[in-house]
Image (cartoon, rainbow, N blue to C red; front, side, top):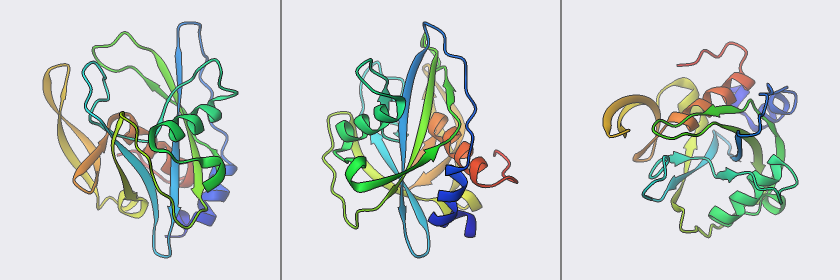
Length: 201
């Protein structure tokens, strides 16, 4: 599919004008990195499986590497790059090309008094081989097929515990894990930036 070729992704994302949310004083900001690995038949995205941690609303979830903005960060893009280095030991300034930004996501995790904007930044891996050095926050790095997600063959439903209750949510299967919730919404926004006919599932 042409729109999932890395060259077309480059054109679409670099030309995308992301929406801007108003940021108030009490609002938290965070950033994540959508790292793409181009291949001959498919383009894959990098995901992390977060380590299990008490009190973390995203404990044990699949996610893009990233984290909270700090006052020492030059920008939210710098946040995404710093957090990627800290979490998985991948230096995006050395191993990848910056492609662009997609629409941010408003995060309000259940059971938490938290209002946060998460901004995803897209990178194209340019180094032929990369290694990872996972910190205590990350259990595993996995690669997911964009083609399988876009065509729906990896779309699934999973049961998750939210605020102490078992609920069913849609997601994308990546190996034996399921990408759901906030990261699932980011994938929808990514596809919407690539495909004007994309309809959220």
